[in-house]
Length: 278
Image 1 (spheres, helix red, strand yellow):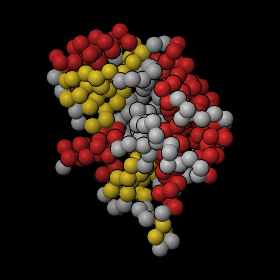
Image 2 (image 1 turned 60 degrees about the vertical axis):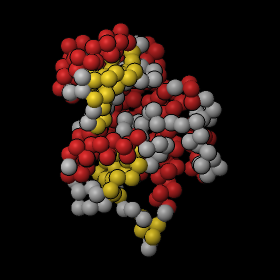
Image 3 (image 1 turned 90 degrees about the vertical axis):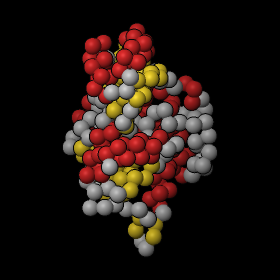
């Protein structure tokens, strides 16, 4: 089929000055007005502000990209989109399934719900770098942890209660991996996020969803969304199948991946994943 896939990053991709290029633009100012606060004022507050801040930067980057037209059409026509966790909302917005206003308000509610759930049931996440994916999955199963992210070859993230995360880090070398605890508020993409998923379901039920202009791949299935409301809520509890998503997009005929938003983390994952698959 050919064409480009738009990729949008998730939490952890923020940078202190990521808003600088967009301040004063109509979409950015609209976002601040809708939120009723400036999420960039103190990104150190974590999930509650980082998620809306990252979404706003992603949406502005997409808006600028979409306006870059040649011969009356987009400079790089998209045939698909995907977002890493939080990035799914920007991907759905880019495809026209969610309006900017609705997507931003959903992200704001999602961030608040995840922060509250994390404070109610303390948890954490640990990246397992290198090692054998099957051995890491078996370690997670033996400890009652969740494989929260399959990001790329050699990068799997586990999620769950803090004490079990500490144990997993201690045992990482048994699976040939190097552990790196992540600076996140809680056990994202695990059963501990069930209260947040319930709140998100309620918000989604009141949100209009339109038919997307092109396929948007879901983290939970590594395939195009079928039921956006159901899948977005369920994906808070499911693993982010990013490696599989990239392989599926390539199989779909995608020849170019365009990352829109702060940083280039996803671009690095594309290179690692597709190099191994080649």
